Image (cartoon, rainbow, N blue to C red; front, side):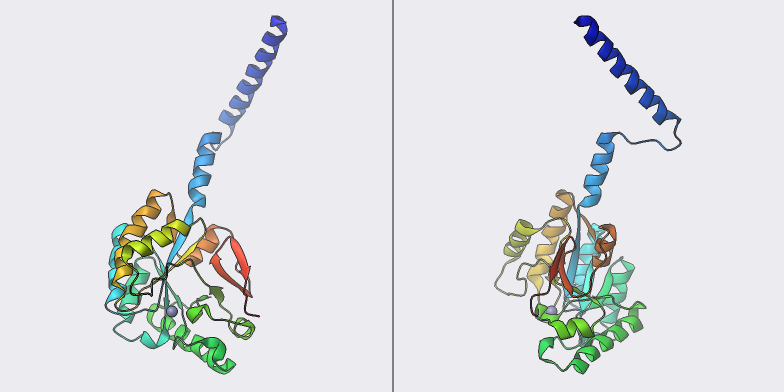
Length: 253
Ligand SMILES: [Zn+2]
């Protein structure tokens, strides 16, 4: 009996040794299973911060200061009618920090109520302004109030984006409430939806807590476009994304 076990162990040891020597002979070092698992786990923890309703010269720069301090990018979904020579400086600074500028309509209306030609005009005017100031044309669109329908999906080429929020447009919700609400929900692949409209100081304070906590939980923050790429997801027409890994067909057919 002992002899049989000894032979089995010898066989096991020799087979391990031979596989090890094969690894040594190959050109690229093969990572140990532990290393690979750790690397994959880290790579999979991604979220995107996004801000709606700018640009402006009060709250937008405060958000940018925090992003710069922590070295993380975000996606800004801007309202066309707020873009002018002055506020555009904030968009340029955002891009210089690795952020992207995307489309949140021109007038922030309930777009399902608009004639389709107006819907197209809202998108085009905002795209044109963004391209004029930062040189890139948006590919993503967040419908105001997440109000959308079939006609809008047919008329607009952009990928529709929603997000995981914390009702941060309600003035009576403190920074702590916004932080707690968001942190209870956030998961891998999420698009986090916040607002940089004028006066939204509680979200400025919440962001100061949100970014360090996301880092502590192992998340890397990227732009929404980068989130799709890094997760290997090709966005589909007729969908609206809150999490790039969970494809939700729009509900308002
Ligand atoms: Zn909005």
